[in-house]
Image (cartoon, rainbow, N blue to C red; front, side):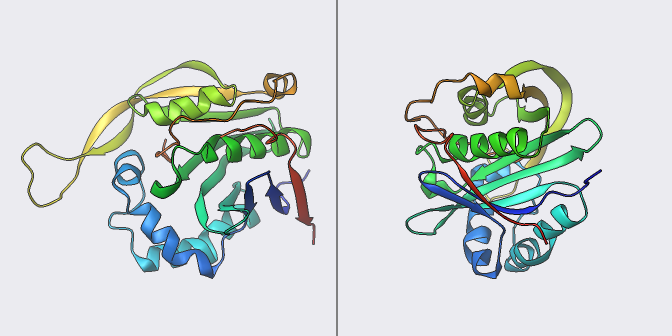
Length: 230
């Protein structure tokens, strides 16, 4: 039984989803130091150049080679500018299921890039990799992430109470510090049949996801995949 994903690149009308490389380090560090990413995720803060280099050149690749999942750097097709991240993780090869997390850079929000990229990965996961379930977990107050889940056709399954920590700024704080606050997680799922009969979505004009924790536009379903199977 295969227990690693192939090394692939996925293309949509506007985006290229590919492995990270060393040229992404600066943009990655800038994206992960955005206040919304800090608030909703568990990434180190501050997120240093060394953190970004380790992720872009080693750690993201190890997710795939060690069988845990796969990480995509999401870039604009025309400019090659880094738009965000889509990360498949907690992969269960026996049940053919995985969890997805995603981040969108501040400058790219509101363009539907999160929903477009996550939907493309879901279609690849179901159609090419024969997976049967994709799970998504969003913090209870992360409405932007919940809008992405709804846009791509996810079904809300329930709430995990007090299951996650978000970062908030203390009242009257003047030093820019953050404090951990416990919150609920909403569990969403997407199955192959949820997207097989889905009409091609209209252009997505809502917000994109800030959270990594735990847009699909017309034509996004027509993705192309290039794979290195060696």
